Image (tube, rainbow, N blue to C red; front, side, top):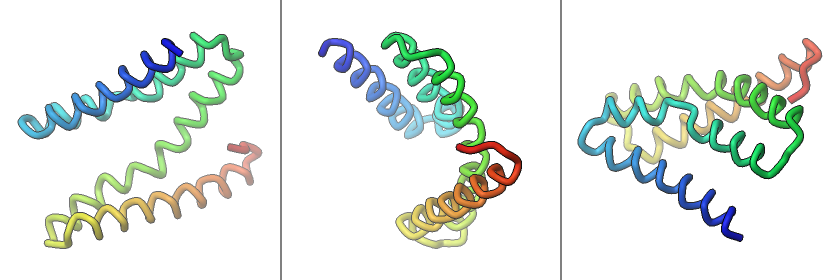
Length: 116
């Protein structure tokens, strides 16, 4: 139970840190958010729970492939906001775009023998 509480608190602390730093220093907040802290923490938590290293390797590889289709959202969202489109709509479009690109990525990778 303590392990889950530690995982929860450390993970939440990172999210709060990013949001608080971003209020005052947006570029520093972006830098912190861009570091793959959640993925690294996930792998550390898995290792600490004695998960087989092949599953950790699969997690790392899957994260690489899933990050790629998420990147366009970080260009579409600010572009839409600067065009005066409100945040909820801009975020919804960005997330929907990411979902479509995830789907396409999985289909393309399957054709090359990589099943995520």
